[in-house]
Image (cartoon, rainbow, N blue to C red; front, top):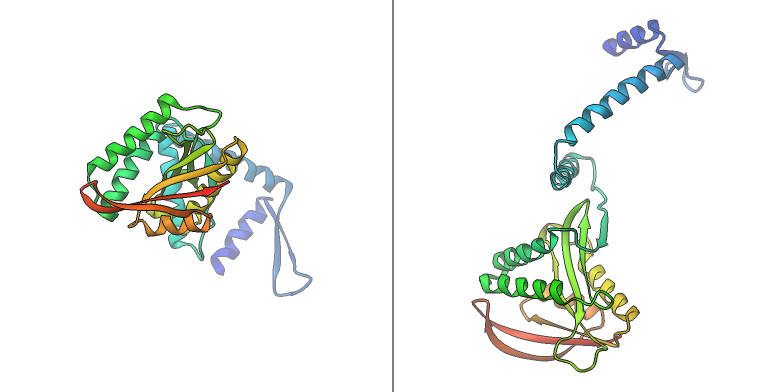
Length: 247
């Protein structure tokens, strides 16, 4: 209290603040900046902005996003309460299709022990999408949380079908660090809305029975199990499942 009193006295002597007793409590003082104080604060604030800009200008955009995510993590861990997370669904930025391949390979290896052949499959799906995409009827989404990629999904025309009104949902993924935010459901809903708008009348997907979290999302979105059969893929014995729903 004594230290604060001395600081306030010096600021008052310099004409930067003015003090008066509180009308509600005579033991308290109301402190406010004077016109001169506001000018001094503005100058200091501008110097701070310029200093921070100088630090950030040295970083590439991806490094700035990493820095921002790290600051939010620190704030969330040391803050007084949970921090709100900003979730945005958008088209992939340059380099993020590579993120789709890498994160699919890493997540499924870590959680289910799938080998590198699954990552190779994802790479082929992404390459086929880029090379043969119909921009009017096929699209990919990245879910971004606080400036960082957190999930993905693709909507493409079902291959091998004469009926052009059938779509296929592919490569739904939510990074484990961002689960619990409802991202998976939002991505699936986004695909369904898009598929309706561009004229599809039915949508299908293929998954495996071990992916229980994804299956629950599909069921909540109205998909029904059409067929399942065992297969050996990705270094594992699996049961593949075909799901579908009308739009």
